[in-house]
View 1 (spheres, helix red, strand yellow):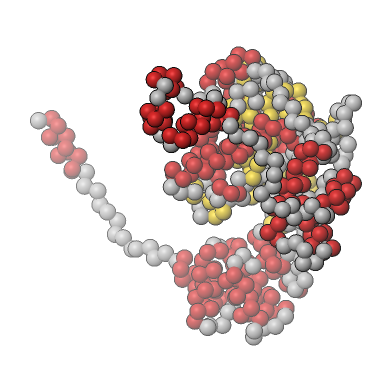
View 2 (tube, helix red, strand yellow):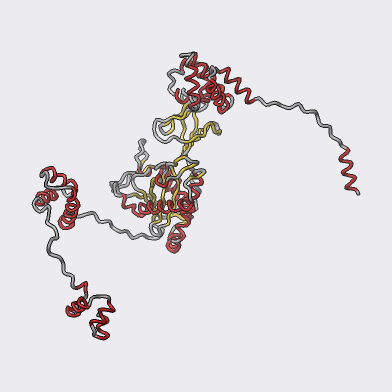
Amino acid sequence: MEEMTKHGRIGLAAMRAGVDRKTARKYVEGGKLPSELIEPRSWRTHEDAFLEHWPELEVMLSDAPALEAKTLFDVLVEKYPGRYDDGQLRTLQRRVRAWRAERGPDKDVVLAQLHRPGEAAQTDFTWATELAVTIAGQVFVHMLCVFVLPYSNWRWASVCLSESIASIRHGVQRALFQLGRVPSFHQTDNSTAATHRIPDGKSVTIEGSSKRPFNEDYLAIMRHYGMTARTTEVGEKEQNGDVEAANGALKRALDQALLVRGSRDFESREAWQSFVDDAMRKANRGRGLRVAEEMTAMRELNVARLPEFVEEDFRVSEWSTVRVKHCAYSVPSRLIGEWVRVRIFEDRIVVRYAGKDELVCDRLRGRNLRRIDYRHVIWSLVRKPGGFARYVYREEMFPSVVFRRAYDAIQTPHHGLKGDLEYLRILHLAASTLEADVEAALTLLLADGKPMTADAVKLLVAATTTVDVPDLAPHTVDLGAYDALLAEVGT
């Protein structure tokens, strides 16, 4: 059409437009562009396979709009054998989708929110298992606590092991100290420890709301940092949509960074956290202008960090254990009957008595688990070997597979109490010396097929630990060397 306005020659215009002369003439005579000549199709290219039985399906959809097309198709196949085949399912799915768009029930509308600078932060947890990160070669099963400022999309991620109040405290304060500023509100969803009901009644109900109440531990964190706690409605996680959307983008960015690094193995959890922090800083650089607006609107952070643990007092049982968060931990038997103070971190526990650490170990994840150190109870077992056969923590008395094999070897010639006593004497030796030396001695005896006795193990351990001290003659010091040195200095 543009060429025709220049010279009015159809042949030349068609050639320059790259179309056939007859096609060009049709467009010129019609006086319309090609897109304007397309007419809506009012006929079907294929016969409607569901025309006969569609009224039945329509009644079913009207009564139960949530019915899926696959379910309706299965009903037809069962009711009319041989009439339909699997290749027609896609056609029915399109038909049902069109019916829902024209006559189906109203859908929930996602209401876009207007965010104000520095008003609120959102926190959420997301599993990081798909990143396949390993620590010293072992798969690291963990989560990320993601903190987001919705207005600028500034975000920070903290490595954690579970969705707990300790993880919330850790993640929130790491983000706040990175910012150096504090927003007015902090928002979480209802799946976090912030709104778990506390059995002893330490919870605060949100007046005039159907939301679950906040627990006092979470509110204490909010009070310390001067933020107002708020949460989404139960089952409405999209109200935390900004941080929910950030989770996927965050993990994609970390995955790309790991690909560039060329390895997903880290020497420690701290090294992995440092890697995540570097990735967060790079991602936040591009949000400078909006972040600056947020920083101006937020209050300055002027409080100290909260401790990364909670303290509770426990009395040591007659089994020489304390039960912390539904799991049992052994402590030195001299503490039986005493009250100890336990510091519960997210990843470890510290048992203290009279201001001194008595036990530091990894925290067990789960319920009714146990961590029993044979060194804490072995002296009692040696004195009372008859209790070993049905000892509740019997399996924890085998530090490794080698010790278990040694026990089985001992029980071959010595059944029952005598065999138990022999093994307990070996275990006592491991507690008194070095477990590694005893294990090496057991391995040697098993390989040679020699009798497994405590005396044999003791001889091997003594042979490996004995150090020959050489007999050296005393060295005579020649003080004349000093006179010679002073003479050289004087000259």
